[in-house]
Length: 415
Image (cartoon, rainbow, N blue to C red; front, side, top):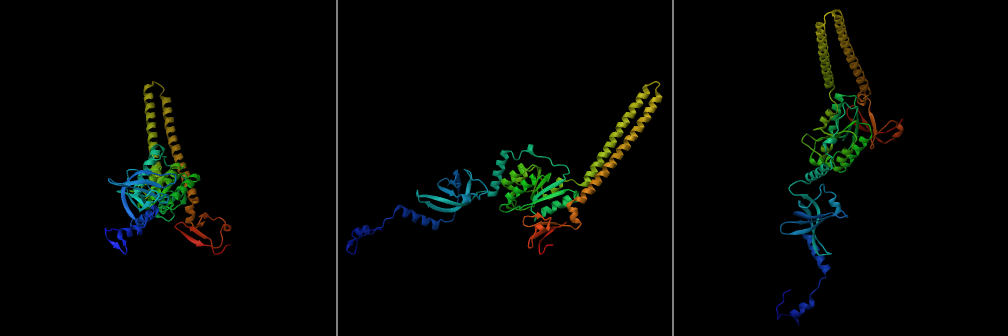
């Protein structure tokens, strides 16, 4: 209040009246007033600045200073918001922070309470990808020396993916077309969304430790970076690293790369290509067998021809054992013919046994059983296979898997 000397208010001089009517604020009251103004005016503001003095005490809250070339402000991000960050802030990073400006009344300090932040100039997911890739690479999870080769023509193949995606059916189609007698064990998981990474990691651990499969395919079809993100999380990377069987990572399309690709023993550009890597074409194997057979026959013929020429040279050097040489030559011819016949017979028997074994395995294949009209019954939601009607009750939901596709049914009566 501005007062000039000589002014009066009623019967009292104005200066004396002002002194007697003034109101005092305590420090706490002043702090509360300032805090109220800040809450009204700066309750949601974006601030850009460089991170310094970053620290994380046992409480889990993130404390740091946000600064530019002229000023700085203390900032805090509480543990609940910090746990949602896909990356780890570091000193020197330029950040875009969304929060509110408040007054820490204990010391009277201004403080920025941060609700979310993202790195300036690059996406938070990209930064998280690079940080995890660097850290796991330094730990040796990407080492080429630990990469395992794929088994030749495995008898059982594991697949960790979603039952809802087209990627699964593409892989099953390739496996069925190439070698329908191979056993396929599917571990269904969610492949995107919150909690999907832990579900994928658990699926890899369960299937790898079950002893049911010799090789495993882990992946899904294409999508955005956010859709593929579960395959960039540390839990999935470490599950792949400790898996006892070789793993093929088949995530997205050829241009998509994930942390899982770097840790896995092999990377496939697509899920369909992963299935092609697991089992070769039957026709290719037959062609290779024929090529080996032809090569072996040529080698044997060449060897026999060399032996015959050597015997002929011996005959020419000897003076009088012509009869014995002729006998030996005849015997050599008989042996060569006998060897050729025996080799041909062994090849025929081998082909017959291979065809018989392939036929028996084809009859035992679950896919072949489904082709004959049978189906597999799973009790939902646990997806347990039903072998006895005593394990189900009226009202239960069942999933019937056919040779192509599946359906959900509800039990109306039991017999």
